[in-house]
Amino acid sequence: MSDGQRGADGREVSAAAADRALGVVRGYAARDAAAVTRALARVGEAERQQTYAVLGGLLRSTLALVELTGRELRTGDVVRLADEVAAAAPTAYEFTVTQAVRAWASGDREAFRSAHADDPLGDLHVTAVLVALLGLALWGRETFLDTLRAYEEVTRTLGVPPDA
Image (cartoon, rainbow, N blue to C red; front, top):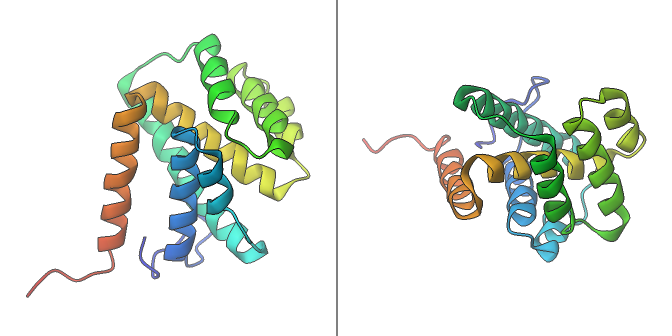
């Protein structure tokens, strides 16, 4: 993502926020707890908001792809993937993430929101896990990780003018 791109709220989203968002999703998809922790290390309020904007865009895009494919995501499959993916969460967030995703999968929006309502960093983890598990459900691990790498490459070139 180039420094000039705008998030859902119209504010500029930094390349660092895109790196953090992709890093945390990649960490969850690869079941790499250290990568998840590194991606969100020392995230202040402004960085958290920017990263959340990028994750929100990734989630909307991934949900749109799920709808386009017409693939039915069974609650049991989503819960199983959520349990696997959430195992990479920091200990303080594993239960919260699992509960939020289970609520989302069962359509309980109130329980989904309340699972992480008072925790902005929890929002990041829950959103990243949703993106990761949906990507894994659509493509499987290797293809999804390849898709994230390709997305990252594209976002890095958006701000670079073509060769003259």
